[in-house]
Length: 437
Image (cartoon, rainbow, N blue to C red; front, side, top):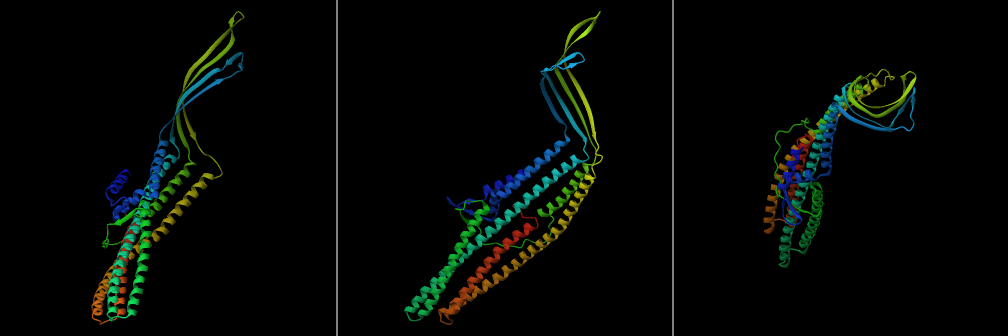
């Protein structure tokens, strides 16, 4: 765990490049590193992992002997008479130490330690699951932000095209080579583009806020993505192997934990054996009385007892009868094991379906990029041809406006296909348990 935290800290320190007091330049990797370093849920999962380690260490102490010390003082006002001898316990004290070693506890200690080990492994898998979710969310926020910024740039270019066309048409109207209706149609189209541009800018601001939230940056931070172009490549041979997925591992560990709980329940009906040794010291116990000194003479005497004792004791506890409570608890624990296995079978199928759906999404989105790229090339060529034709009055204004609109839509489709592929790719790695920094 310490190695992972060191690597994350090193990545966070090295990746971001600041571009001003409130601005920062980020790429996909630096977004991931910031998200992992700043996410509160992930930090809680890290704390839970450390807590699980302490639970395991606590469970191990049950193997070790228990050393305890005892001290007491007593002041008894009355002096009890014991067959003519008075016992004075005014200021009597007792001190001792004892060492207790469990020898056999029905398998409870071993099962508790195994449960502690399973708890550590579950906490580590939970932390890994949370880390992958954080990375996937950061990828989604980053590529969505990149896509919407590219659409803003696209609409800016589209607006410039309409401005150029508007200027030319105004000149043509003055030269009576175009009608005022043509000018009105261009102005209407330009207003529509300005509306789309404003919506895109609003969307970019929302995406920026979402990215700030995902990476833990201040909401006033201006973010400039490094990836002006979205590079896409198939991840190689896709498969639906989910063996590394944390959710699957956690379900398997749940079965292991239930089996250890069966052993814990069985330990309640098995004998326990322990050994205890100790040393006790008694002091300041006074005895007063008289004794027969001979010839009928009774002489007084006093005696103070200060002495220590060494003790050794073995204890054996054997449960005999409690209306079958222990055996019924064992049966309940075995039912829990069976339910855990059924839960694993059900969720394994669902995760397998999720993995195959993710594979299909990656493949389909990659094919969509090729389709969108082809459509963009065709739209660009069509727009180039229509511009030439319009300049020599071989096509109508409607044809040119349609060609520009088709180009804008094709370009937008290409941007969406590329960004969606990156998001689907990240999700595929997450659902197959392979999404890491």
